Length: 355
Image (cartoon, rainbow, N blue to C red; front, side, top):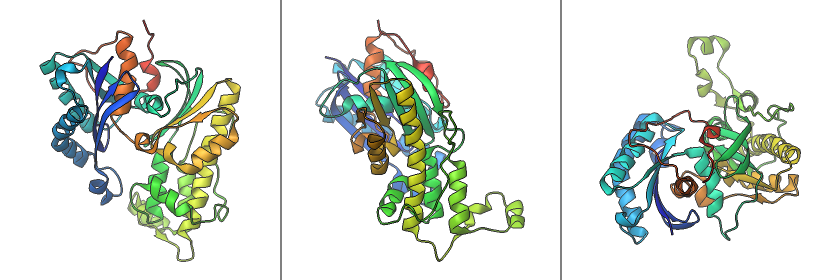
């Protein structure tokens, strides 16, 4: 029986969780900062760091207490090392180092994206993923398509070249005047709209497995807003943020049409990769994997099993960090107390062999 405390502070959630044997959640505490950042229309890094400092002690203590154990009964402490906001990552990793030193426990630095992958091991009913599996990670600033051949074994097939899917949701949400975060609010608006009202372009329809959503975002902005003049944009870079929504545009129709175009781009390439690589399952992970339209479209596009986490494990949480750490822990991997954050850490660099 292995119990691991996970800590996650990569962006705007302060989270801690105790997971047993990589599958059973004994506790899962998340302190969200959504209301704090909503006034800015997105995550404000300095504000996020300060909020992590204020919350982390209480959150970790609550997670250990909710698990019904004490620190001495933990086998290891895991913490998100990257990718993410530097200031936010530093709060979590420094706190985890102090805990590991004080409790004399092994420390493991975990890739945030790998954590999202391992949220699939926490689903009910519990069933091991069949390898090889194709993983689509759609999380905040990351859109990654990976071939997973075993625990810690990843081949990156493609990813975002500019705006990730989550970023596109947030930016289009701002254009449409919807609250932050954009993803769930666009999905709610889309349910009342006509997805065929606008013919927005599908991003990168070429044969690669890369994604690009900047053009889609710009197409939405040009179609539904009154843009500032070219002269105004030259005088004030970023003046597009002040574009005004046209009075004859239905927010619901624009949201539905945008969501349709984005989902089709994700699903088309994922389904094609799954067939080409002869995988046994398709896995969706990350915040955007909570999107119902994406889940339904992916199931319709392939005869393979399509798996995704429950809604509470799609967004950032520490249970997924502890679950990912379980396999690294049993592979004999450990990290030194002087390890540093890796804000631009690619998932392929975390591969390891189980001993």
